[in-house]
Length: 200
Image (cartoon, rainbow, N blue to C red; front, side):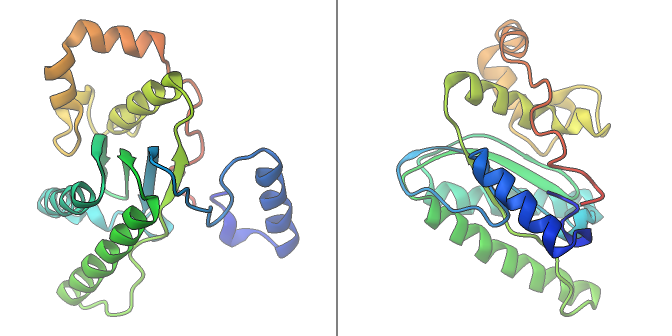
């Protein structure tokens, strides 16, 4: 899915058809309306590290993202902001309100960053994607996936060393033993394989 720009129209049609048949999100997936738990992710355009031009920018973007999501969601269970993408695990009764808030945040931050860097018109973000959480196993695997992302990409060696995520707080709340049990019981395996491909 993430080499979409390099595909022919025929290849795109086949991928979308396959994902529809598999009941997986397709390009520009529909957004559910019922109260539920969702994994929401978004990336910088072409996975460029636009969020990550400095630690300060990642920090400020994370603060703004959480403020906007918390205004519109019942709960944020996990989050992580990386230099070129981010992930959220949220409970919401209106996914459309959440995705609208994310779109507005992307617009505001893009204008600000482009003004600061003299790059007016640069596309900073790609659309956000959502995936409905369908079971407890899916929920815990998603939480592990989100917290493990900075380790997976080699930014840090341990979850709690990445300052731009909920991992440290999660570990403080549940304790190392419980976190290790959840990691063992709900492994991420190939969860999310290809989603964060930098060649997207």
